[in-house]
Length: 337
Ligand code: PHE
Image 1 (cartoon, rainbow, N blue to C red):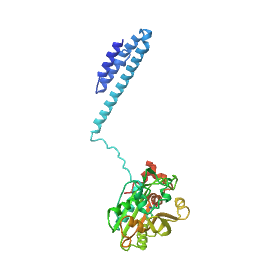
Image 2 (image 1 turned 90 degrees about the vertical axis):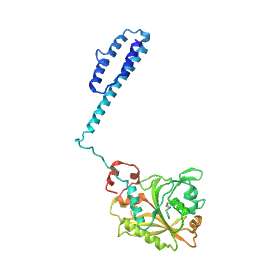
Image 3 (image 1 turned 90 degrees about the horizontal axis):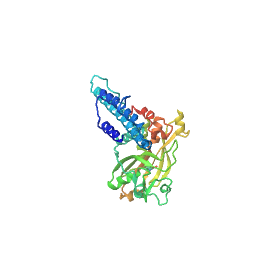
Image 4 (image 1 turned 30 degrees about the vertical axis):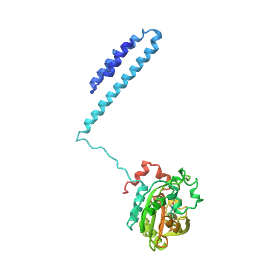
């Protein structure tokens, strides 16, 4: 009996066919009512009790493998038939759906274009940074709360995920000499609770301008130009005094968007004003740290979150929508370039 099972198994393994008729006649020959496997099952009835378990199992395994093999051969034949049909040049073509850019990319590209037009170059840097580029070179005192575990994702020792793209500006300062005009777009990380208004991963664009005689008026005009280009000619901005370790004086800029829709109300906390960036005159210590003489050069810097601006522009009430990659949501941005 065992010998017969083995023979049949070998026969099944050796079989191959590439047309439906051959597969079907093979199926009948093995699995049919008068088939070879059926015959073995008949014979099984007279197998001594003590061997029943072992031989029964072998038969079942064989049965299963032949059913699977036939199925596999059939699928192969079907798909190769389809292959033939594909080469039929008269068939109508399939529909290819075209993807769309992510709203974050759309806004990033638009902002980059606006600053490119006034002579800013784009610079990029690593997402994993050391303490010097993310904090120390930017005049963060050793005990500054931003270095705290609550804000920063530490990796090992003083290596962390960058908390802003100001780190890229340090890299630009150390590898070039003024005049410097650069913007640094990129992904940043902060250990913050995720809510409708904030996320632990987001995107920034930071700008740096260093030359002789750069003043706060230059900063203001540059930002006003940006706001008008991006939000429209009528856009109003306001600068509020603020504090950053790397700029002095420092400010935050709000744009007035109004309260036309419910989303406006939600994202501006009912004021109509939305803070979109931080800015200021580069602190002389930062220039010194990067071997730039603060008696000769001065500069301004600014940094903005892309998500906030995208939310305002596209009326997105919840920042988390930007990270879910929900196709239905992303499809809405098809017309963007
Ligand atoms: N780096 C600051 C932040 O991440 C933004 C900023 C950049 C502020 C440049 C002032 C000047 O919040």
